[in-house]
Amino acid sequence: MKYIVANWKMNMNIQDVIGWAAGFDTAVLKTGVGVIVAPASIHIFPVAELLKKIGVDISAQDISIEEKGAHTGEMGAFQVKEMCKYAIVGHSERKEAPELVIKKIDACLANEITPIVCFVEPEKVEMYKRPGAIYAWEDPANISKNGKYREKNTKDIKEGVEKIREILNDGEPLLYGGSVNGQNIPDLVNIEKLDGVLVGNASLDPKHFSGIVAAY
Image (cartoon, rainbow, N blue to C red; front, side):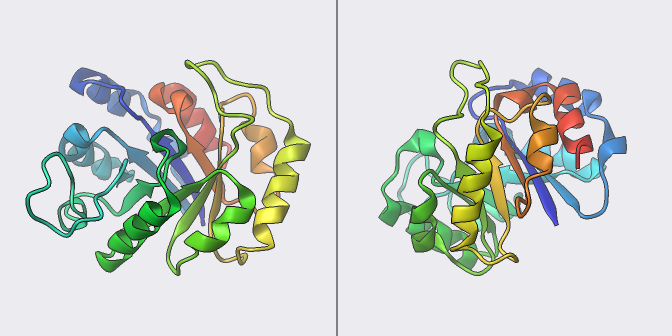
């Protein structure tokens, strides 16, 4: 199974979302390729209503470690699972301690949500290993800044993937994140033992994102 995850971060208003759904090319969707969109929490319901009809799954951008109660602004796993099959946890932008990320992973799995576990240092993935998780390596050398893509060194990415695969089994999905776009996706698709990509800025344009999905 291959996974292409769109992390919209704090972008897109509802009109943008409607336009994105209209502009995404559903013809690129294929069996064995899971397309997942992570909208801002305020838009999870309308995005789910729009995109599930066309075969795109929904992810939360984060999740609370708390079960329920007086936690203003938090989204509990028991709430998220009503709309989402997935949740991104440990994204590098949040700068969370590993102990907190582990609690979020466990909260997801306890509620039958698949965690998309982000990590920066290849050797650190060991502490996050859990059956049923998807792993996303965020390469800091290639993460885009202010919407500008960075040029990738494919050799370095291959070496990073090989290091991670010494820890993860082949059956444990591994994604790559860091300035993924239509220009470099052909190189990423051909990296052995990489199971997909986590796409940031390039996922905001539905036609551009459709091209990334089509590469798989």
